[in-house]
Image 1 (cartoon, one colour):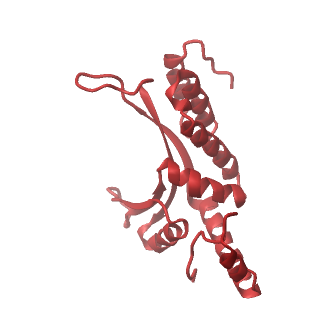
Image 2 (image 1 turned 135 degrees about the vertical axis):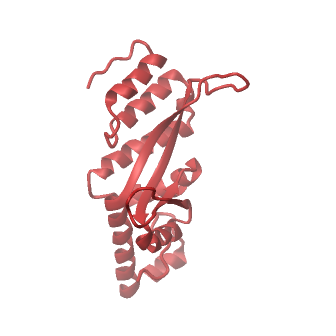
Length: 198
């Protein structure tokens, strides 16, 4: 159905031969269908996520400088019956992994997650793709906050209290699944004069 789905030709740096291929009416139409499928699939099933992993100093191991590590990931989740869609997405982007989450509840199929965590892959492939081909739903705003946070982390901002606080504030405006009070408490632990203004 999706043929040879790949990111080649979809980002600004495509080669001349790829541009020539895409110039024919048939290839142009096929390209738009594939592009629309990727954007729509991610709009409906994807997530741009920032999270925290706590690790203070403990006997025999030095913790993170601030006591927390910020992690970033782009994820698309599907049931086992739709695994082929995740494989097509992985093939399209050429980065990331697919992981199985075994169900231990009353569901009949396992869940699979296409995940891109490597910062280089996010900055080189995922972020440029969605900047060139924006999402259509409210998820677009989450993506913009995510891209800003990943860029700040690439610049090392997460290693300072001030930079960490800025990234955490970006994360608090995304997805809104974790109560703000948890994040504000973490902020107060790192920067005692931080207040909840929202």
